[in-house]
Image (cartoon, rainbow, N blue to C red; front, side):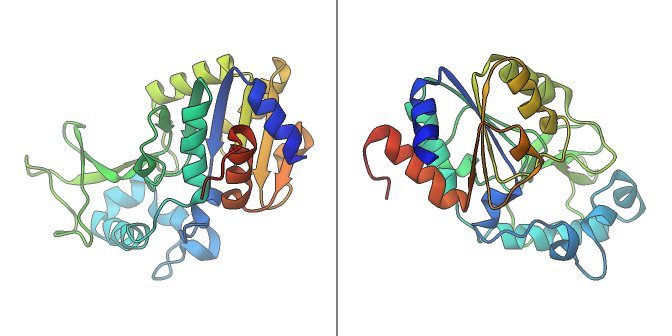
Amino acid sequence: MINRAIDRLKETRYLLVITGAGISAESGIPTFRGNDGLWQNYRAEELATPWAFKKDPEVVWKWYDWRRGIIGKAEPNNGHLAIKKLEEIIERFFLITQNVDGLHGRTGIKNMIEIHGNLWRVRCERDGKTSMLMDVPLKSIPPLCACGNILRPDVVWFGESMPTEETQKAYNVMSLCDTLMVVGTSGAVYPVASFPQTVKEKGGFVIEINLEPTPISSIADISLFGKSGDILPAIVEGITGQKMF
């Protein structure tokens, strides 16, 4: 089955890759949902909201400070590096990641949207200006902008709309790709969750890489089950004929 994926990618004119929490889990980053996200008896769904931030920004920022401490120790894994290599060997390539950990960016990848934002970027509550804040731990909680207003993580919270510009770009790329590769996500979060079906309906090819079957499996042309850090380098090596590591 992996050989069929390799053959397809050799013929691909425009590859779109979508990644989710599964690829970063292999770098030791918990999903922060369910039991993995439990912090001081709070769940992620209770803290990652605009209402929680308005009510108690200090508590929300303490949770993010804890998360940043975990993520800051992680490194891009072989799956992240293999996706960067795909960008180099396939002429037209784009990555949409649902992850906010910044690990894809650390590989030097260029053609990418972080559609849910970036945990290391902050936004001023007053004027909306964004900047990077890499301090671990944070020097003050909540962190403040130079103008004196509170900064918030520049991520999409539960109950918030997706950023218009990034979402439109994602739809544009999806409409152009002839092969879609979905890695480490069950395809439950919209609008990206609709992309595999849409790509299929327009005659495209869908490759899924996940630990186990997901709702995407029923429509994927190829489903490869296992660690993305094993499967993706094997695909790259099959395309290039060279060992990655």
